[in-house]
Length: 139
Image (cartoon, rainbow, N blue to C red; front, side, top):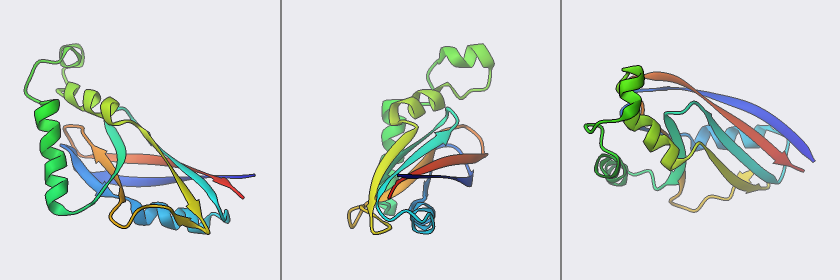
């Protein structure tokens, strides 16, 4: 069993910025020296999340609009009273989406579906520099 740890750094715009990170993840898996196994992706931070989606403009728009309906920005959040930074909604959204994702790979290729991409979602209310940690496990 081999374990390889890598980081991906992103510059995000905040406010539900959705970034397709599939190429970076695929490249790290391919270059890891591991033939088959799993890659675990973990976001370092509490105001962003990760998932898979068909990364096409209308679905990306639908996904962003869903967050505004389900966890709106413009309602009171106790967190905002505590810190005054106005990003209470960002923390709630991120915890709902989740900070990690596991994807199997075979012959150094991610086992994603034809229309399935890995996306990083930044819910914070300002641009940020973000770090994702990848752990590639396998043989």
